[in-house]
Image (cartoon, rainbow, N blue to C red; front, side, top):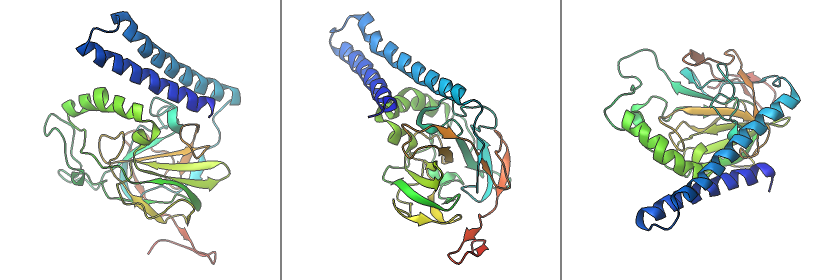
Length: 286
């Protein structure tokens, strides 16, 4: 087990110990009050150390590597959120290879209620209310499938104030304890070659049409956008990494052909990726 995996495991144990001690003291005055905060402090220290390690590693290698050029993982009109065009790490952490990750939500041509907004009511919405749910996901390059998981459920949205509080204070802690799989949700990982791996997270349950070992062509459908894992609404989380295992991977920068890296709040149109046929001819999907 690598040092990075050991530190991740130690952090989860510390957080679980803190929760267990707090719950125990609710029913039995078993632990001194001050003692319960020690595992929480250790959890925070380990997390800070892991972030510092990521920063130092980037400092040793100098500037960020050149972006890897790929096709976009979707087609149609989308909006970017949590984009590395605005800051790195884009999601506030380098954990699970997310340094240059991006979130995108479907934004069809403006029409009333096309994508539900955020507010007080309803507390949660069905996934079918969001235009991203069920949208096809495409291979961004010729690649080999190395990991797939589409067994986790697609939960309701967390797009109200009360739902976000629950998401941050209850669900977020639970998913942290569950490790990478519970954070990423259903996912597929592609080996693009040259030490580059593409991860698609929050995939729709049961939608993947590929399995580990499959060879896929650029533009080939892999599955559908869902709302599994650490997600507030149906959206696509895409990232490039230098390893197939997100727990030990570092993020790699990307740029999408004809699009670049859309900034936060920027809408963009993604055209279908050209599909390379076995004979070498290239054409757009039928």
